[in-house]
Image 1 (cartoon, one colour):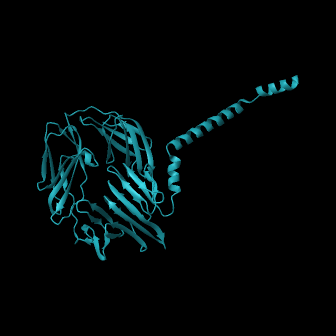
Image 2 (cartoon, one colour):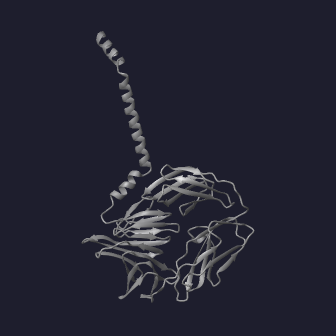
Image 3 (cartoon, rainbow, N blue to C red):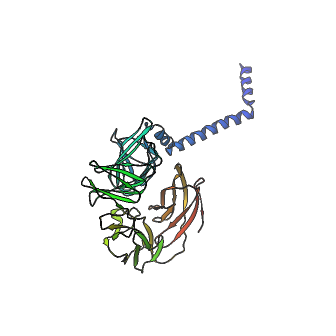
Length: 409
């Protein structure tokens, strides 16, 4: 027994050093795999992939979103807050809140852009006999539809109140529910739409407008553009002692008889953030005094004698500051997540209340300085602009692949 014990003891001490290294490497690899798996799970990597891979046949897909966007599932009546790319089945309802926007890729290749405060129901999404049937209903708000090339078996229909509107190939169309008139509005900037209201059919073509009210469709008109803003310039800084004069130009069609102006603290023009609203302005200038320091947004639309209202123009931003300042705003904790394609989520930390602007999108930093912004960028490098109401500003160059940011000014 003594010799046997001594033999085992000697064998244990004779283990090769390479074996010890090999065991240590196995343990380390297991730890890295486990840690990596935990990180992917915490960031919902597997859930996001599963959500798309498990999508039922012939479903549409939300490819981009911003703000509060929800889906009401027809099968379960469950309401889901959208936090990642997901599918939409026939019967489902998409709802955007005051700060919400969404882009939906349909099975025929068309794209739906759903504006804030809108409700869209996916009525049909099916592949039949080599073609596709796509049908949606706009209940509230505004919906833009872009189509590409279509086959003869493709059927793309948008329902607006009592109208059925078949969207033709290579078309860019806007559909709107006007809450003031309780009617529908159809604007075509490219291509055409075949509209059917109570058996009355009409083809609305490029640069044309028509309204749907009381079960009838109005005669077509030339599409009226939004007024062109002149001043204050986009991103202009104005000292607090100066009155702000808003100036704009008439649309090129020159059919506008009055204008509608909104000035807001929010780029989404939510009701609680609008500080001034003036309708039926006949002049092309409006002066506002005693604006407190802060960041503001303004936009315009025009009204024609026929009753046609233009779309809102793109909002312009300006800042009222106490005095000009050159102090730089620091930013840190940069992180970039690729949602899919050219869509990214950029987050970081800066001064509380500062405005962060990237690729035409902007957001306010929260009370702790954190911000999170979804952008679309074709190139890997983007410019980040950070500013506050005192006139301080900084500019960073951000690489979307490495999440590294370099201050430029």
